[in-house]
Length: 122
Image (cartoon, rainbow, N blue to C red):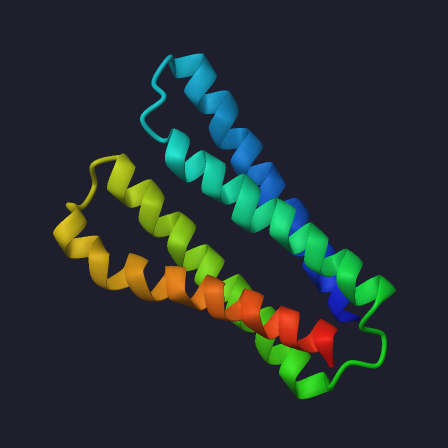
């Protein structure tokens, strides 16, 4: 499966999760998870969708190993970040417990963006 398709499918998975969370918040009138909801949709869905477009339109001959590394880094960091935010804002764990997860995952998302920019520049 091509990386553009992988990014697209992962993006749709995040869209489904984010919209499901949004519907839950609306139905329960409990909006404490709105930060996690926003991150799921923006970092998960929108960024993955943009990466899919970039791969389809500009990175057809990208270095395979670096592109695959960037894909897995983005997916792992996004999943860790969004799950961590859900656990934080749902009150399951305090920030002091989740900070060792949230910090590195945020940096992972940033490194994935830098890698994508590098792939495009090359």
